Length: 169
Image (cartoon, rainbow, N blue to C red; front, side, top):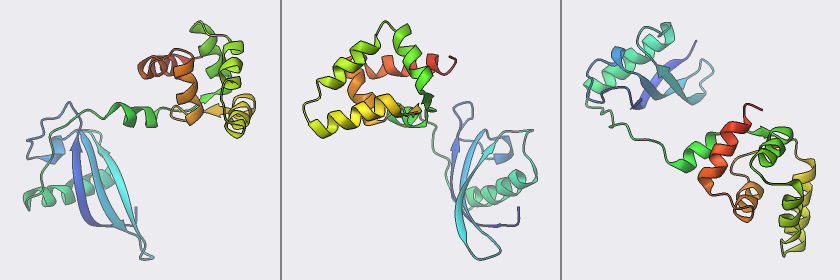
């Protein structure tokens, strides 16, 4: 990589790592930092760190992060991401995966059609119908998914489970 590290923004340890580590070469986690490219453009990057699996660039990041830490930077204690953050990172499902998962969960496609038909606003209902019929993939936090899940009797956690199971279909 022909960029130079401008600044370390922070270090986020993985839950397997002691956040009090003073030696970042032993850290499992992520470093957020800013680089400057030869053309002068700057970019924020993230590099995952894992002892024994760090390439030359990672070692350069570790060196810069170690200097940052030695100058008073602090590694926060690891905390689990919020459920909404995890949901936002879930990969999309194909229409096939989503429909199969719904059927396997005991719902019918007629129930989905009925739920869409119950949407009071004409434009929202038409948009939902188009999404349902023509979307080739579905995002976990798409408004249609959030709306239909409640109507079909799913809790957010139920949808998370359905989503994970659907990924293997």
